[in-house]
Image (cartoon, rainbow, N blue to C red; front, side, top):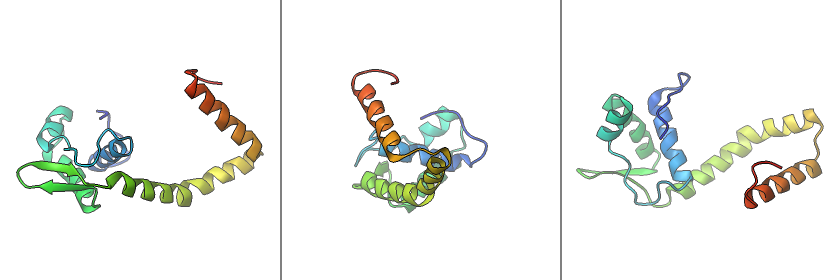
Length: 130
């Protein structure tokens, strides 16, 4: 986890978002234990209640379960649930803004597809950029 905190959002929310990113990127998978509240608090110099609040949001969302005396664990299917929610959020909130930018810049589908293809081929060939 990145130890830098953004001042625009509560730390507990940023902590929650970082765990979500770790689940989406498969750093944490079904059944994996989250780092303990005590360890995260000590490592990032946070109040343990702040860490607990971030973790509790994950519990409330059904992504993580609390096992008394053992810690917090990623629920089975958490990544699938997150992907569904993130895709929906992207299509409803971000995509309309992307489309507006595409139209404003006068780009067309062929331009965009060529860029995607060149980006993908440079990733697979080990190149940085096209």
